Structures are given as structure tokens and as C-alpha cells.
Amino acid sequence: MQVVLLGPPGVGKGTQGRRLASDRGWALISTGDILRDAIAKGSPLGMEARKLMDQGMLVPDPVMIGLVRERTLEPDAREGFVLDGFPRTVPQADALDAILQDRGRPLDVVVALTAPDGELVRRLSARWECPVCRRVYNALSAPSRDGRHCDDHPETELRQRVDDTAETVRRRLEVYREQTAPLADHYRTQGRLREVNGTGPQDHVYGALMAAVGTNGH
Ligand code: AMP
Image 1 (cartoon, rainbow, N blue to C red):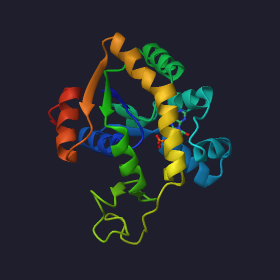
Image 2: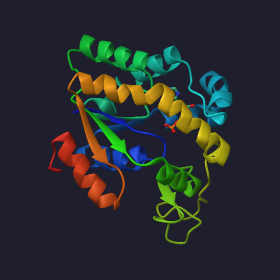
Image 3: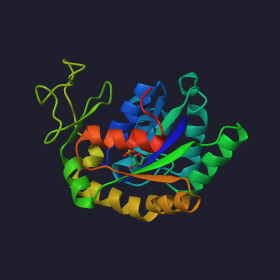
Image 4: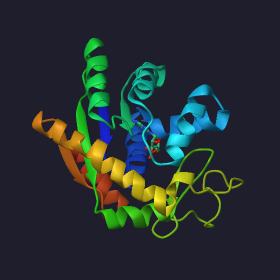
């Protein structure tokens, strides 16, 4: 299946999307992770994206569309994929439809995860991630075993994202409201949106996500 996970920063797209993709043998395609890798490598894409990301602004549509067009063609995405962080604008959504239509394999489902702003800010300021596997921890609700290192990479210290500072978080939520939230309406009017409450225990959210995607995990 080809699934889009929509939702504001901090709602759990990465955590839930990773679990869904891994359970089903699909690729998890996180555009934020792809950009962070590009920055770490110092590639031209990374150089273009860095400043915008640090400020909580969006990377231009044509760059993101080209990137997703290529990434969704890779072999690990053949069985299916979960898109986390893309589309983020209506032009990105339209381009995605056009790309997948051309391949004769349209999107199966768009799931919007929801949570109140206060909860998002609280989660983002407590978010720590493993720079090796990108697993995300939360210092308050889901810490790693020793609180400092990744459970799967005990040598690796967790770190905070540079754009998880209070001011940048505010800007990212603003950008989300202005540019990305309209996408929910866009998909809703097309009858393609399923909404899942992203608050509460991770396992409950995951159960609701699987139901929304129409998979019982087998
Ligand atoms: P994320 O990891 O999804 O929170 O993304 C981190 C940052 O990467 C965003 O704040 C944007 O600067 C950039 N980014 C990720 N995905 C996109 C996208 N689809 N369109 C534009 N910018 C993006």
C-alpha cells in the first residue's frame, strides 16, 4: 500500500510511521530525515536546505517533489511506502497524485494524526533522537533505557534536533497551520482522509492507525 501520514510536527508521524512500515515491509520515507542526511553529508541539497530547516521554513516544492519522485522508485518502496512529512503543501499533494497516477498506482490512503498544540510543544521540547537509526525518544513519556543512549545503539548518544528549540517550534507550527493544514481539507473534500487521534498511549494510536489504513497487521 501507498500511505501518506499527515499531521503537525510532534504528532508522532515518524514513530507511528516507522512501526507501520516495518510491520508491513514497506519503506518509511521521511523527507525530513532525507534532508538531515543530506545536510550531514554536505551535499548540494543539504546546503540548500540547511538554513530553511534551521528557521523552521519549508524547502521549495520543486526540490521536494523531485526528491520524492526518485525515492519512491527505489526497490524497498516496491511493496509500499509510508510518506512522513510529504506532502506539506497543496502543490506537493497535486504533484504526488500526478506522479503516482502516471505509474498507474494511486495513493491508497491519507491518514491525519491529530493532537492539541500544547501537547505538540511539550513533546517536541522533550524529543531526543538517535543520529544512527533515527529512533525517537521522549525524555518525559518514552525515554531510552539509560536516558542518554539509543537502546539499539548503546554507544550512540541521543541528540536533540536543532529545529526543536522553542522559537523554531513556534514557527514550524505556524508554517504547518498556514501551508500544510489546508491539505487535510483538500483530501477530506476528495473523500480520501481518515483521521486518527494521536494522543494517548502509543499502542492505542497504533491500533487506530492500523484500523484507518485497513490492515490488521497480517
Ligand atoms: P520534519 O522532520 O518532517 O519535521 O521536517 C523537518 C524540516 O525539513 C521542515 O521543517 C522543513 O524545513 C523540511 N521539510 C521536510 N519535509 C518537507 C516538505 N515536504 N516540504 C518542504 N520542506 C520540508
